[in-house]
Structure formats: structure tokens, C-alpha cells
Image (cartoon, rainbow, N blue to C red; front, side, top):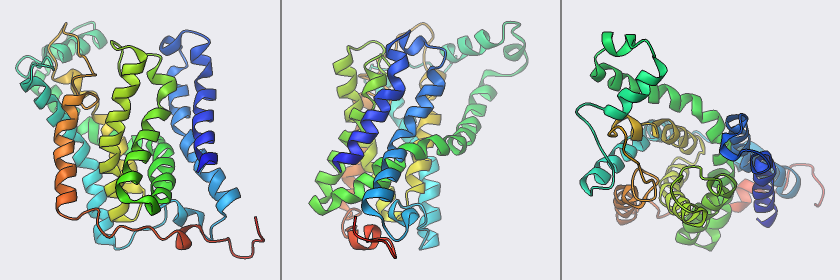
Amino acid sequence: MLVFLALAYGLAWLVALPLWLSDGLGNPLFGVLAIAIMATPAIAALVVVRFVERPVSIPHALGLATYRPLGRFFFFLALGLILPVLLVLAALAVGAFLGLYPADVTNFSAFRAVVALNDPTGTVLETVPIGALVAAQFLSVLAGALINVVPALGEELGWRGWLLPRLLPYGMIPALVVSGAAWGLWHAPLILLGYNYPFAPGWLGLLAMVGTTMVLGTIFAWMRLRSNSVWPAALAHGSLNAAAGFSVVFAAGGERIDTVNATILGWSGWLVPLVVIAVLFATGQFRGRAYDPVLAVGPRAGAGAA
């Protein structure tokens, strides 16, 4: 486990190093480097599985090749596509209710400003009703979720594909807490530069990120364990990233969005997911999800001692 964490964290910092040595998030290569960082947990998991654990089947050991029962697998795929969008929207609603999120669901002023910025001639806003543009964002999110599965899988192979099952022998709750916290701390190279929490000091942004990943990581873990596959969690992760832009779509123009307190990244955004988690525990959804390390990480057929 230490080898996996050292690789995942070390590679993330290594890839982020050009950002720290130049303009930070303003580096023109930020987008490319951010996607590359997302691949580091998968690289760490593959290295550990291939050279340390040496299972009979690497895809099975990481939850990539388990699709049965098919009905449950497809149910959780659908849930992975839809549930994160609902949680993001619920976070905005809760934040607006508490006065923490500056909402504008009448004129969509912040969204109008973004559209105008990308359309200097004003043709789009003149010819297309703002309501239609907002509705189109929902279709865009669904398409974006499918595209985002690829980079999201880079993270999910590590945190839910590899780490979570290896922590289950220590108990369900410790496994959920530790895997979620490890996921959050892994974001440090970008969070400390101001990513996700631009108005907060680095330590507070990182603390908020850990809270976010522990909450959302528990829901992703439920999908992983109940489906016996990493794919629903990867799709949920991709859907979450695609839906993040809703915080601008429904915001008031010219207002600051404090992500420590609002959106799915802030504490008010965790309230609905925490209710979901409480219901999952109360209904026994995490019961009986024990992991059999012998089946997943037994020695590779024909391999000698490591």
C-alpha cells in the first residue's frame, strides 16, 4: 500500500512541477498537465498489481472486467451518469437557500456573460432564448460525462479500483474514510496553487477538498462495491466533472462564488450527499460487501515467488 501511495503522490507532484516552477494555474500547459496528473493513480495501481501482487487477472484485480450480474452493472452505470448531476444541482439549491451561493435562475446573468464573452457579435443571445441555451447545457453534461470517463478512469483505477478493496479487511468505515482522504490529499499539487478554491488559503482549500472527496468518495465506493466494477465509479466521476460548470450556469453575474462554503466543493454542498450516505448505511447497502483478497490478488499463474 505504501508503494502505491508513494507512486501516486510522487508522480502527481512530478507532473505538476512545471506549474510550480512557472505561472502556476496560468501555465498554458495547465490543461494537459492536469489530465496527465489524473493518470498517476492508475499508473501506480498498474505498477503495484503487475510487479508486486501479480494476480491471475490484472483487469479483475482492478475491477475492470467484472460485469455480472449484468442488470446490476447497467443500473449502476445509469446511476453513475445521473446521480452526480443531481447532487451538483442539489448543492447549488442548498447553497442558495442558505445564502451562500449567489443564484440567478431567472436571468442566468453569469451564464449570459460567459456566452457573450465567447460570442462577441451577440448573435447567439439574439437568436436563441436563454432557456434553450440552459437546457442545452444538460445535454452537454451527459455528453461530457462519457468523454470524461477516460481521464476519470485514471483516478478511479487507483482509489476505487485498487486502494478501496485493499483497505476493506480493516473495516468498511476505515476503508471509506482512508480511501476518500487519500484521494483528497493527492490533489495537493493543484489545490495549493489555488485550483478549485481560488479565494481560500492553500491549507483551507486542501482541507475542503479532503472533505469533498471523503463524502463523494463514499458514494463512488458504494457504486464500486455494489456493482463489483470500477466502471460505474469512473462514469460517476466523469459526470461530476462535467456537471461542475452548472455553478456558473445558475449564478448571478458579477458575484463571487466561495467554493469553500458553496457548490459541491463546499460544506453546504456535502449536506445532501451525506443524507444519501446515511440512507445507504441505514438500508444496509454497505453490509456484506466484503472483499476477498485471494481471488483478486492471488499469484499469477506460472509465476514464481516475488
